[in-house]
Length: 247
Length: 225
Image 1: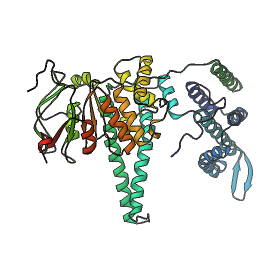
Image 2: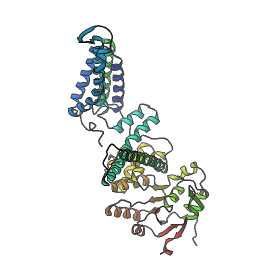
Image 3: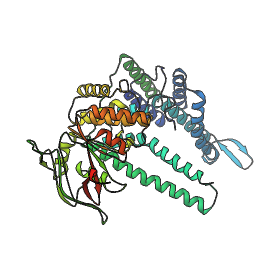
Image 4: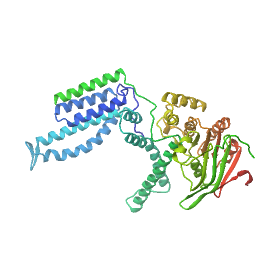
């Protein structure tokens, strides 16, 4: 199970301070999501594409991820152009296509793609752990940070456990079908995973206690903003102002 | 008869413990001295791990008293203050290693004990060097091999500079080479330790006192067949 495909790389985007990346991502998402000017939104989309290109990310990987998002958005196009009120731009027999509906669907499509692309470029180019570190530096509540942290650390272990159990089932001739036996076996599998994860979490806490853990995490690495990061921060602010002014 | 001028490192008196009605430890007594090298043997499920968890304060016995370094242990707070001095290595290294990188995991204990990040870095470096694990600092813990995980686990414990070690099944799943490394590290160290294991050969090579847990009590294993 690989989840950090894009995190290895040496482009300028990879080098940005993770704290800054999180802030840029957040501000960008909010500004784009709340904006209804089609030109501004398109400009944001172009900016996202520009970042992807200069970050030299794997285009096929990107398209696969975008495919998933646009799968959902496709449904909007089935309904919105026909259900909105307002001016008619085309009639397909008894069905009217409304200008307002098409406009809204288009806005949502562009916004979503711009935000998802920015998310992948900003967050995907850092390792998950450096983002988690960055979150704690940004004063995100400890509980949330720890939740993310342990989820990510142990998702591999749990996945291994799942694969082992699944293989053991296969070795004994289990073939998933649409019947009660299959459902029952799968529910045992999931139940067993839950119990094992619970037991494991208890053992981890015990191991941590044995090493002097008293509900407080200390951070070993500290981040430092470089000149380059300040330059990135400055350009981001400039872009944000640009969006706000155009709005 | 042993003459001593300092209190026993670990002293358990009439410890009883049961899991939902099944008696695991029955009036158990155990004295461990600082330099002792003890092998604790016993069949599966006889309570070896339970015993070690009681020593570390992870489980509370139904009755009996625990003294560590001559101090009576009564609350979580008492145990907190001695956990740094008794290094405990868990059976499954995936339970022990929870940080993303080796350096952070090894530094976790020292940081908890109040070292500054800079001091902790030095401690990590020193500990890794002593185990021939130089250059492991930035390795990702969950991508280490089983043997490497075990050695790094040991490093996380040794980094706290404990006065005594308890190792729970340290050789499970290890290849011969790593087992040899472990034998070497333990026999060359100056620390006292207790090893919980089924691996009689390993225990014989690393310890000088064999104990057996049977029917909830401790026996000298030499007297048993």
